[in-house]
Amino acid sequence: MKSKVRGIIDALKLRYPDAICALHYEKDYELMIAVRLSAQCTDARVNLITPALFAAYPTLEAMANADITDVEQYIHSCGFFRQKAKDIVLACQMLLTEYSGKVPNTMEALLRLPGVGRKTANLLLGDLYGVPGSVVCDTHCMRICERLGLSKGREPEKVEKQLRAVLPPEESSDFCHRIVLFGREVCTARSPKCAECPLAVYCNEINKG
Image (cartoon, rainbow, N blue to C red; front, side, top):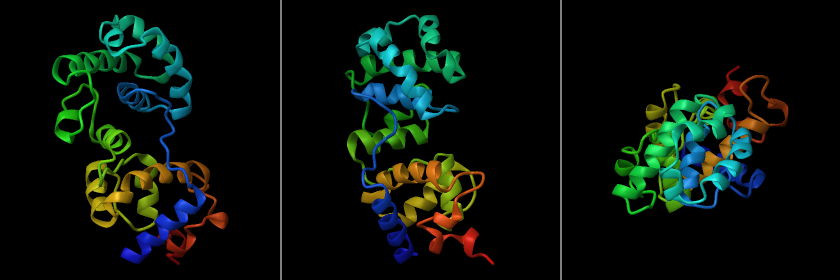
């Protein structure tokens, strides 16, 4: 398994040298907001929404003091906008009142924020603080890692635990970003491009016959 994981990581690095988050942001709390908006929504759509939202509320204080119904108007097209708007405003308020205006750097503290689950928390820990072992289990990650035999099932917390056991901690955050890019380009949910897949040699789906 160790050599298999190393081979997969190296192949993904070769194809995607820059393992960057697809969401656009400049400030730590802006990433928190963007990730919340991305639930059941594409990153591309979120990136269309956030420039106007961040321009309207250019500081953490402005976002924390925003009228939730006004925020809803900016994020309406990304789905579940009422709950997302409420979570965003309340989370920004909590950053000010309990965390000195900074996105916290521990899983325990992040999970206290409205709308922040383990997926969001792991992404924030990996991207903002470079915390080793940060595994972001989105749909791409779970689908592809199961095809590759790195994990089983589609329950995020269980898959996260399985991947933590096999991924080098210092590689895990970048691995998850690259898996998302790979899932969009090659290993799609429907009609994956197996003939051009750089990970074909490691794929259980391709080699199960």
